[in-house]
Image 1 (cartoon, helix red, strand yellow):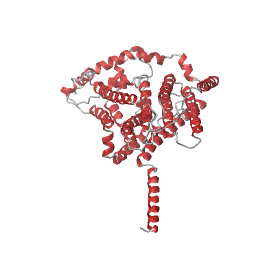
Image 2: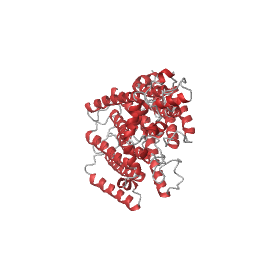
Image 3: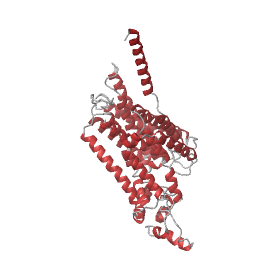
Image 4: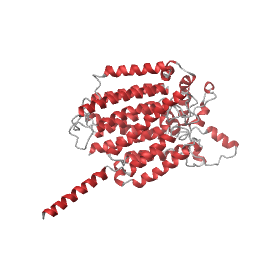
Length: 487
């Protein structure tokens, strides 16, 4: 081969390599669709109510994103994530099953239908076919609300590593914007035009949400997300001044944690303050227990041991926390601390609801009253002291509400997921913590799941589209972590 031919071949190979590199960094259709869906969800999906006007925009957008995600889906992706795909299909199937009409001879034998049967007899409608759900309209609303989360999950499992980082960076950015909006809401007062929902915690910093507790859950989830993303993007083999960059990253994370703390204080959520402590404990434990591993052959996120080791800066961090708390107290905006010391009627009601809630769970076992049917059904179990001008739209304990409305099948679906997660994290701990890509995926996803699970004992964050999408993104991340580790 002549010199000219060899040169031409080398130039062609260089050009092809450059094209391949550009193609590798070109955002996929899945990432673009997921980004648009997240923006729409944060803009219109901050309330758990099914009659909000914003859902007329969000649900069609979610349906389009779901159809597009199914179009992009390949058999290899389905096979790689078959467990969690099957789990989500089981949830949809259970909800749809509660809408299927049953013949009277079967429906009349279901537990908890005595009052409805008496009404049918008075109306001479005892031969009517009825679904399992005692409130089919609310069950249909629950079924439609799954469009967005399903689309988010299907899009997430199709992303490459750098696209996963971009997706969670967008969540981080939108969460911080929500926090800044909450500050403006507080500064402008109850008449602020930045309260986006007609039924909301007016006077508290709710951001994109209608409920201050849901806003606090999102803000708290930003702590492990921010830490994990920093570790994923930091590398020991970077530029010569990498030590300086890592030190800056360490201080940025510390200041970010303090900033999130101040935003949680603005929300006025006591549960959020306790959840913040849980998030910090999770992050500190993982940071102290893990080490940076330089032998990762798949481009893992390596961060030096100086990153996030706060032993020498612990005093400085505590000083910053004290400064923030003092500033909030002096400005009169420490709504969270005020609510910690003042117990209202709503706090007492959260405890008095426990007995009738247990009665309702046992009354409808093992079938349940119907997915999403809590509001009208629970009214039949309320005690006289619970009767007020307001009403319980949810149980404020999502674990109990799942048991009441979904019955034993719903609890079985939850138990299967918990068993899979227990096995996965047992394997992660058995292999030792070394901050590989797989392990950091597991840390981010597991932290988000743990924080939402804890908050679900006193609230219902996963009934809100925003938190629902963040939750399924965390599930997708854990599913990808298992695949990354197997490679």
